[in-house]
Amino acid sequence: MSNTIEINPIKTWLPRINNPLLISGPCSLETEKQALETARLLAKDPRVFVYRGGVWKPRTRPGSFEGVGSIGLKWLQQIRKETGLLVGTEVANAQHTEEALKSGIDVIWIGARSTASPFVVQEIANVIKGSQVVVMVKNPVNPDVQLWIGAIERIYQAGIKNIVAIHRGFTPFKETNYRNYPNWTTVIELRRLLPSLPIICDPSHIAGKREYLFEIAQKAFDMGLEGLMLESHIDPSCALSDAEQQLKPAELGKLLDKLVIRHESANNVDFENRLDMLRNRIDNIDSELLEILSSRVEIVKQIGRYKKENNVTALQMNRWSMLMESRVKLGKKLDLNETFVKILFQLIHEDSVRMQTEIMDSE
Ligand code: PEP
Ligand code: MN
Image (cartoon, rainbow, N blue to C red):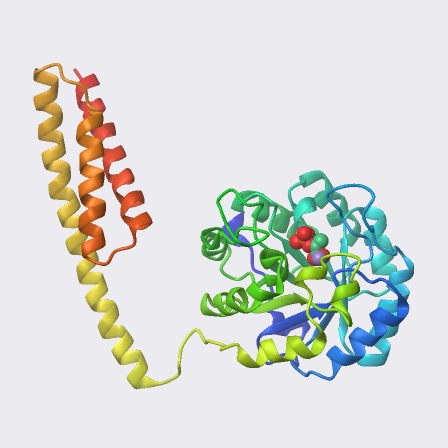
């Protein structure tokens, strides 16, 4: 069903947008004063279109601040009326969703922990059937693109076409300075599988710390994502959740000033011509690469047959260690990234062993 999904562009539900989509506001709404004062400052910046504020907070451990609950929806209504910003909050069950819809919340989002649970997503989808709400779907905590797409499909099947995906990083499965591992390959895969789906980035939950917000936000624009969700708070040092990753509204403005917004194309003939020329060269190099790989495969097969005749194993650890070491060394000399060379040769070698065992097991 993935290929048949046609999601509305952001402009459909936000005609005044002049790219990118910026969403900001506190991690959690804490008091009426905090919610409104933050909103008033954000509303002065025309780059911010949507105000976010968590009212039901999914916390990893019990005992942390779990949000102000339904009263926060009233504050969001007030903010909407007073500032003209669209307002959004996270929903995690049918009751949250019913209350959010009743309060006229413009945007609801499904949090990372909920996206990982098809029952929860379906429960939310059943409530929003027939409504005009915009639904944002955060990635699941694990980098499973199918689980992310599954959640989007459930919302889409409920008749909602105003959907946006939010990339907020994944529970770290590799060493990282960030709170959540960005794993951009999952985002690229989502874009490839659902090309019409707008995707925005949430640098706050990836970074976990203010100091990393800029580099992640810039990377999101470099990758062509359509917007950002950045947490902001009138006084982050007193925030009841995610204190270290929130920005004062003025700091948010400064961060936005520094970001370079890139476009899918430059609308400039010289640029397009030069890019075409460089891409042609890449296309030629790629076909040479594949031809070289195919010659390598021929030799691998000869070795496989030769080993078979002599009853020798397909995998020989000494040879493999030596090969890897020498390729990484040569790669370094050629200024290639070490991890890249390692992964490349792991793949090449794995496939060689596969071909040789196939030859040995045939006839
Ligand atoms: C949030 O946006 O405040 C939040 C809880 O996010 P996530 O679901 O990405 O952890
Ligand atoms: Mn948060």
